[in-house]
Image 1 (cartoon, rainbow, N blue to C red):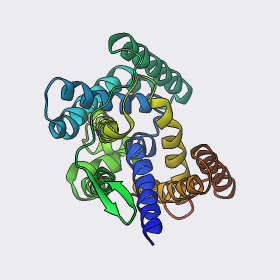
Image 2 (image 1 turned 135 degrees about the vertical axis):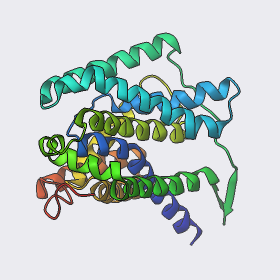
Image 3 (image 1 turned 135 degrees about the horizontal axis):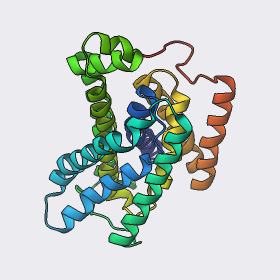
Image 4 (image 1 turned 30 degrees about the vertical axis):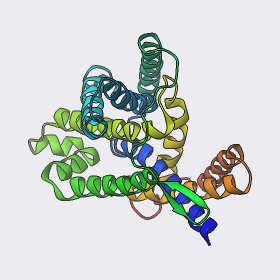
Length: 288
């Protein structure tokens, strides 16, 4: 019974982690149809936005919940204005530009900070579950992921800007005709996605640590999750995270971490073969 409880907690953690690293990409790719190959580096930047201030004496929670999302969000707005905006509708050019940005960010981080793993000690302690111990920070990640997803849903569904953003992404010409500043909506939406990515990187930094190439470990899973989720931004991401996280973690317990990763990719291939439009693609388009 204790082992089953620990396995359940780890499965929930795997699901939460996938959803956490994917929600920012779900906003940028799912809503804006921008293929951001620098998404992993946004997560990396969020991690450093926690680690470096904490090493300088800043409170962990201030760095994690305030400095990281604001820093990466503002960086995202700048990137949207300088790089992404001239390339809307040009998929190949956007892929190449964001890929180049990814390589640039990795190079700058390696040169400035150094190619070594930095981290901040996870807060809280651990709890005894029978003969096993589980870190309380695991429960924090699960809980804060649920709050983030609920907050994003509430913001996009129940605020004026959220509704304007959804309408603008579906029909920018009509939004512009109604007096909406489309460029501003795109910039803020991209900044929101970047801020969520930075927050995700900040939350995971105490567990995974940060180094310049850590984004590579995130981006493939994030894209697989968002694409497999299908047309709806949040519901699809949550559904894909639940499926892939559960499969990966259970296979990991039965074999090894590597086999668990392979199982995730295998399930994604089968899923997209059976449902080319993703889990929610057949049932909804343009929703949440």
